[in-house]
Image (cartoon, rainbow, N blue to C red; front, side, top):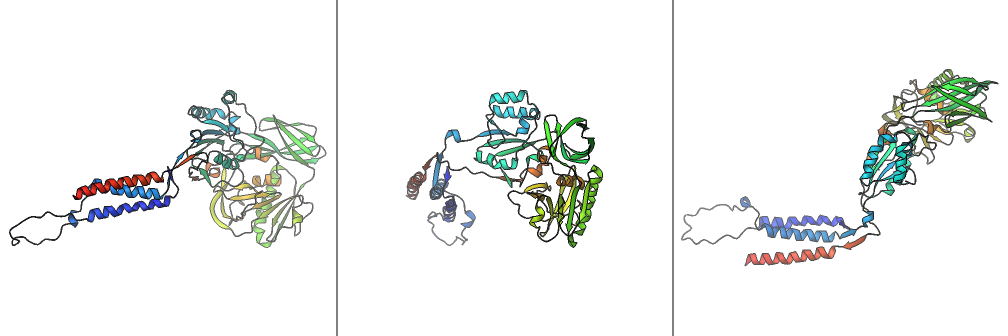
Length: 491
């Protein structure tokens, strides 16, 4: 039962009226015949000292009448829902758990839920149901396979919430906690009927981050390696004639295909453009940004020294047409011609806000003191995110927007030894880097903190019965009973 006008329920407070009248109503005393009043002393009325309930049944009857009238004013209705649509129970599992050995860790819990009547689905845009035969096949042989196109689990959450949008629905969601499955803006809340269980997965990936041809027969390959804890890079020198290298105990093969070079790791292939000239970096800065320049130059020199990649760094007042990457550290607007054919780094210029948070670079958190955040564009992706959810580095098309700074008043990034490893994939981006990043995220970084309460929606197929006449009739019948008892008591 529900009420179409629930605000009328406040009228139920009218039951205080008969209670007050009942308590303050003075009972009629008995007449006692005496011969003289001479020996009777005057005394104050003891009505206030002797207030107590009498005729409790009659009082309760009057209160019930007022409650029924208040409920009638609130327009009560009875919803008879289709029994097939009363509740839905589902277990939803993400593909990287279904098709890898990690499935064995959650299989007992899923089997128990299926026996309790839960249906099994994949956490994909279609939320396809997994048949018992398919589940049996996956349970017996969950062969490891790489995820070539990671889903964005934040973007799928509204689809899941819409499919199971009734309070009586129950959803158990199993996903990995890897960073590559979370992109964009974190949802503000999670519906109360969804229980999200992150599963720690142990996966390692190896890929080609960048390749440079040093001379006619010499190559410098930068190999990336990601695990649950961190991302590391190692440089390998080889010759064009040698088609294989060894990295982290694995034998990797590579081959040239036009302007591209491919690295083959088992069944996985990564590909980048072969650089045939030193990488050109230009820094355009104003006076106010000179402290930032110091830290950027130090990080670039560390990258070149550590990896052996030839980087040519220049500081100019105008954009160098030959630069591959430009750091725009100026307060004036970025000219459109500078963005053509190159990646650009823009420093924050909006008014900063003091924060107490950090960003985790591999395993070490680095403190962030100020963030200058603006509204993100629809096609703007987040590359670095703080522990409390603020966007630290975003990218829109070929422009990176850095919403903090490297100087001490902004953050501790400038003094961090891990800054070169952070900037390296920005300077030399790997097109498919997302699928190779298997680092784990802390639960508070990807899990919505608030819970959204759900209200039962009125089903168009439901039969709605108006209970107003029945409430009025019940109140009238009780009123007749009350009048009969009251008159009988008086006579």
